[in-house]
Image (cartoon, rainbow, N blue to C red; front, side):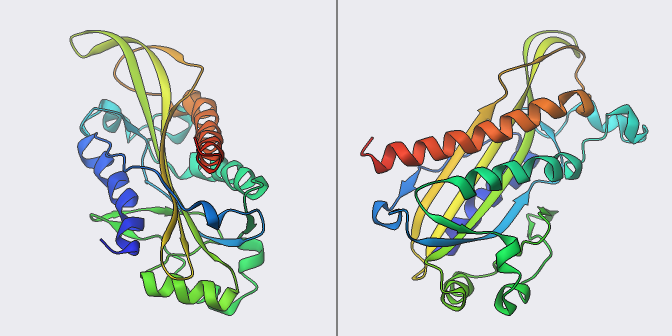
Length: 249
């Protein structure tokens, strides 16, 4: 499998989550010598699945019945609003990591080589992903290596997020009496200038807090703080995992 296909794998898994309600978690991979605190990596792409799905529901949650409801009702499952509110926290944590130096969109957009990359998020299995403002799509392994060369960085990093919710409790027919938690799937991929994977991890993270619900739907306005909490916790867990593996754990 090429390095670029390894980058695409978690994105495809995110799309598969939307279609099948399943999660495929590839093994974490770290190249320790790539993280000496001095090397610089360009955060090129930050994407997300376009809808908030009920985990394990095989894409058939009843949320879709409320698509005609007003946005203020909180029953629209589009993920664009929560994506805009949650990805800055991910980037801030990544930027503060001591294991490397990070170039974010503010710095990258000064370079023509970066601005010329596609600004539209990739389509996976026919599903149009969301793209964070100021970031770009990488279309090939060669393009990633060439970009790192032009930016004079040691490599590139991509992030992908899938937003979900999970119920635990019991059901009376189609009605759930449950505790409802946010559920996040965070994929991190980093490649060096030769196209080798130096950091690959997939984090599954539930929110600590929960909502008490009766029914098979989710009010995403009420779930929003839990989605943000779980997203931040996912990045914290990813960086803790990186630190542990670099320490030989």
